[in-house]
Image 1 (cartoon, rainbow, N blue to C red):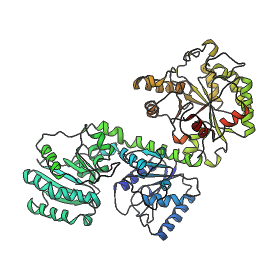
Image 2: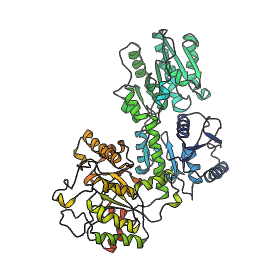
Image 3: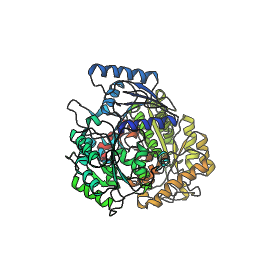
Image 4: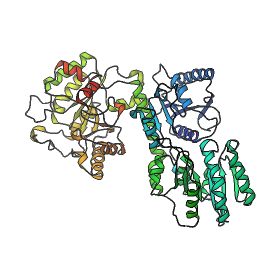
Length: 615
């Protein structure tokens, strides 16, 4: 499942977005993916190939050169996906990819201003990764981005690496406050306010206190801040108690050796992961000392850097002084549960989600239309008495297969779909007229009637089974006769695996999941899959909601369980990539006409169904 990935970024100064792109690219390279970076400067990474290109140069002629350069890289290296990390990078990558089947994914790290010349949000690509919930809201409301293309994924943290960085400072009774961040722009102005109005009072009252500033762009630091800093050094012991460390590659060690870090964004996240107290204040707002009580709010704004609505902000220096007085006198307790931080920022979990975003973007561009997904249950010899009409006779099912053949439809499975998405199968081989056959529950007549016909016409599909292999008949549908609705034996189910069918999960016992607690629902979801994989020795990636009933809570549980797809009934997205956990399926009934078969196997049917039924 190795992908060829091209990262494009502006790196004319080292910001959090550059650190994010580097960490991501190096982790992907270590995981076996083929990774190239194109950026303003070479030498950013020892393990990833870095090609120099002035991405941040927005002159018209240089943009044309950049586009031509990227097109050559994409073509010559057969790139699967391009990941851009700034507006300039997204703009250039968008035009470089025109006319190709290669998708663009952009990560947006901060509020975006609606550019008067930006007529469309398409320059950001098929998928947009936003690093916090408040940014998602800004992009959706102010820039009117389609929420279907927005993915909320924070900057990841490598907790294993951070755990190796230990406090090295000798406990000498001092309290060290480190201000970490770049000194230009709004952050520089806010830091200047702290230097001028907060630190003089704290240093005066607390002789054991030391303050240090860590970050580049000193030349852009407001002159008032420079003057106030020089005065602090004069008044409070020169470079002993007041220091400017500049940009340092040892910033993690500096933060580990600090008692408090003042910062936002990635700085705050890393400091918390190192076990250091954090005072979160950024470009957009101030959360103060981060504790378990305000951690969720701080995460929502990327620790003060982003709010959905732009509100003028300058730190309330009197309030900041009071907060630090409370900290220094021991009347406020800081610190958080590291497990809570890990649950949000763990790099391994986020890496998997980013790769899933890539594959979604790949298929969203390669297959922009809806893929018909047909839902069958029983295939009896003759019509049966049933309340739910969930059957198609053997004779009619063969008519369906003949129709599919005449129309040139090619059956794929969700596993096939993943193989194309991940690069294991070349996209040029993706069927022109794909569709997916699905059968729920594993009725005995599927083995005796359906499978021989499917083999005769060269079709395969997805069989959704219960994990309880002791179930012998349908006991979950009111009004259905258990004896008349027998379930296959384990050996008969194995025959489908041998014929190349995909096996999906359908819970353990077929309950209505929204009626269950989280714990009980997760047991049904996971135990059903685990038993199928154990009994049939096959990989299970898709999950069909029993009775077609689900809600956002159940969808999230299916995601957490590690499935790739959640399969619905008569509801869901317009395409698979609109929502992989609400894949629309259409019911197949006993008396389908030629026209109804034509409709239900047409890419336009999903949109027609939504307009007609409103779902």
